[in-house]
Image (spheres, one colour):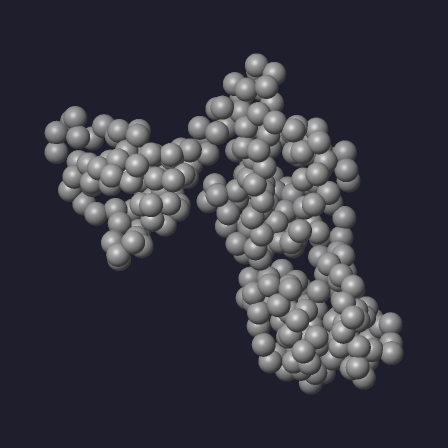
Length: 294
């Protein structure tokens, strides 16, 4: 391979990153505000320079090859650093603009922070993605999110972490359930009960199951669902008892929340970012705000 071919064309790299993150050439073109033929040309040129395929094409959908996945890990870092560079320059000029990407396990975890940050920095574009703890942590570690807001038991050494508050896990039952007349249920009474749980990777589920294990209690999981709203509806429809974070138990005419006695099952939320990025202007501004709110 000639020396000329080993030099990367930045525009081609940006096109690759857009296709890889958007999942299609059409969406990539829209995100970059260019025509799809331009995207196709740049991707073919990049693949041709190195004599390999970065994507497996399946109609309008594309999947990353192994080498494409490896390249995406690098471009996530590259374009994250580009945003940091823009942040440094805009802060120095007093503009305080830019784009901050926040991941959180639920709206209740992030709403107050986002409102306060938006009021202080109205020219900063904020985007919020919701998911379980595993997804949010992965997003921060892989540069898809700048900030993560999630409960953590042991902080990853790659992360800078700021704890704030705590959140108790409670039970959800139908209003006609035998337990509905109580305010609290002893953890021992959960033995053998049918439960609707969150999916694997949920910190709420993990903390609950850990408490059951410590107390040698076995429940009957009947359903695992990927959202807190779906858990609520499943419980309301009589599929079993559910669990939720206390500050997320919104009023529902068919549901009642109960505390769990005999065991303290509490999550400790943290705001996290990569250690190497904690002094990035927008991230630092967000962390400083959290310190004020705590």
